[in-house]
Structure formats: C-alpha cells, structure tokens
Length: 119
Image (cartoon, rainbow, N blue to C red; front, side):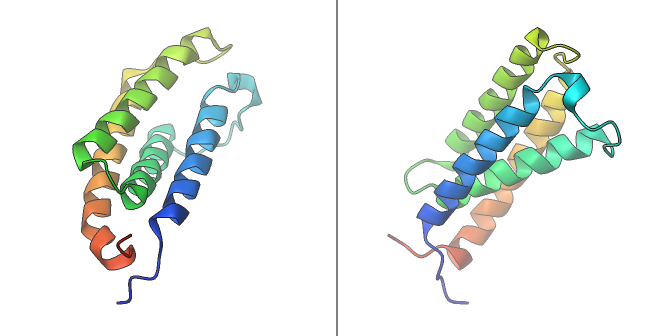
C-alpha cells in the first residue's frame, strides 16, 4: 500500500474532532437529541476517533503521551460538565472515553506505518 497520506491532514482532522467533542460535550443537556443510542458507545467512538487521529497526525509524541493527553482532555470535559445545566460528571463516561482512547492509539500504532508517509 502506498503511503500517500500526510500527517498534516490528520492534525487538521484532530483539531476539528477536538472542537466538535468540546462543543457537544459542553452543550446543556436539554439541547442534545433525546433519541441518542447507547451513550457510552458514543463516548467510546468519539474518543477512539480522537485518539486515532492524534496518533496518525503526531510526528513527535509517543503513543503514551497521546493517550494521556486525550484522557486528560476527557477528564477536564467531565469536570466542566458539572457546571452545565442538565449535565454532570460520570465515571462511566470517563471509562468509556479512556477505553476509546487506548483502542484508538493502539489501532493508530498499527495503521500509521501503512497510511502516513514519513516527513
């Protein structure tokens, strides 16, 4: 497989995903759709994608640094949700986010040599 993708593309996508997660996570609970499927799966998928993009876009950070940074971001979001109407801190959300992060980084480690050309 040709490595035709540049890490800069993944950096831009990572910034877009981070912004999206930040905005959606800090919206008041009443503004969120009420017909969402299982909430924890959405947490896992969102942070899986975030960590995957971070890993594929990173040229200088180790995988554990990316995982730690994404988990800390998740923790900050959970703490901030305490101050948002109809939202709150949930340990289960933090766990789902963290499992998504670890999975995303691991898959990113596996995919990176095949997808991203060296800079």
